[in-house]
Structures are given as C-alpha cells and as structure tokens.
Image (cartoon, rainbow, N blue to C red):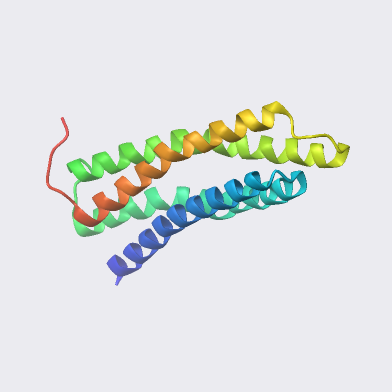
Length: 158
C-alpha cells in the first residue's frame, strides 16, 4: 500500500510540474501577444500565484516522494536513470528559479505600466523573451525526466 501511495503522489507531483509549467507558459504567451498591459498584468499576477502554490509545492514533494519510492522499491539512487533524472531535475530548477524572479518582475512592470498609463517598458520585453527562452530547456528536461521514469533504462553513469 505504501508503494502505491508514494507512486501516486510522485506521479501527481510530476503531472503538476508538467501541467502547471505548460499552462503558465501558454497563458503568459497569449497575454503577451495581446499587447494589452492590463491583460498582461492580470495574467502575470495569477501566474505568480500558480507558480508558488502548485509548482513550488511539487518541486519540494518530488524529491521526497522519489527518494522514498526508490527506497521502498529497492532502487539504488546511483542507478543511471535515477542519476540522470536528478541531473535533469537540477537543470530544470536552474532555469525555473530565475523564471520565478522574471515573472515577479514582469508582473510588477506590467502593473506599473497600467497604473501610470505608460507603455510596457523595454525591460519588460527583454524579460519576457529571456523568460520564453528559459522555458525550452526546462520543459525539455522535464520531458526527459518523464521518459526516464517510464522507461527506466538500464545504464550507468560514471
């Protein structure tokens, strides 16, 4: 029973990471394309909340459930697919942490533009395109982790 509970929580956490990441990206891009400061500001506000409520929770739950699941099943944390999953998880985090700051900053810049009636500043656009670019390696890493969790290929690292 413990195995199924851990696996369930781990799969739910992985789904939340993938789904929230894809959803946040979709909504931010759609808001940006409108060029409407109020839409961008409102969307960015909600995106920041979603990232803190859903993504951050899953970010902390995944390693805990993953280690407990590996321990319960008897997998060595040194198995190649687990090591590579951990590396890809760290890569994802290396891109996600700056993205959180970028989202906070874009939210604030858009809200300020709405309040003052000014256009979105260049710094918003630079942040948006950097944020957009950071999504590709992070998303690819998450897809790689999903594949590794499903396939569990037998290989060694180092």
